[in-house]
Amino acid sequence: MKKITHFLFDFDGTLIDSMETFSRCVLTVLDKFGVKYPNDIIKTCTPLGAKDTPKYCIDTFGMSITEDEFRDIMFEVAVPDYENTIPAKETVIETMRALKAKGYSLNILTGSPHETLDPAFLRLGFGELFDKAWSVNDFTTNKTDPEIYLEAARLLGTSPEHIVFLDDNINANRAAKAAGLTVIGVYDISSESSTEQMKAELDGYVYKMCELLDMGF
Image (cartoon, rainbow, N blue to C red; front, side):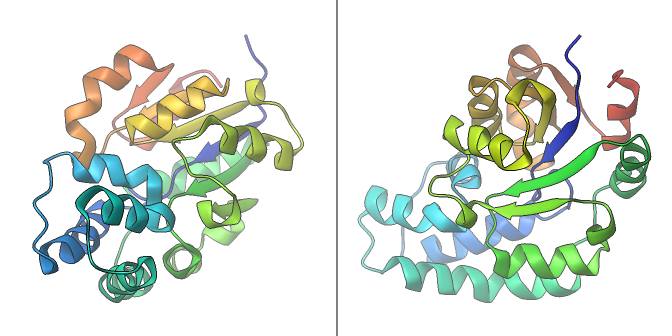
């Protein structure tokens, strides 16, 4: 069995219950500009994060808006929720404490920018649990690219086979799997349609984070 030393967690929809907010801020921009979008647009945008979602939507739908303007509308909707109300998902904090007590290094890699990551991270007391909290803005690519997970491994001073990655988005999970990480899917209502695919393709799947403690890591 691989020796696991590090965990790398997504943030939105995995550690915190924020996918309704993310969905709302993306759809607010698209609706404002009268865009007709497919039903799975949020699944596509989630691993792109606020960094690359504006470019994707502008290019795909021919929107007459700049990336910065798109992002500004997203932040106007999202930041108050991250600062004040979004909770940690059920059993997350106690599970992180248990993993930390076992000596694992716990880290975050999210598609969210620091404008939303940082206030929620601080408010929820995650600073005492996690060693690193990265946004994709800290890298030159996004979570659909296996290279971001290889770079994260290098920054952590380890190799992919020693890292467990957890995300609720199938596209991010597939990229991490391609990079050689052990990958566990996480249930979120926003990605419920991908549950069976994740169970079939990944190394494990949890409905609640506490189930991770029974997986033998």
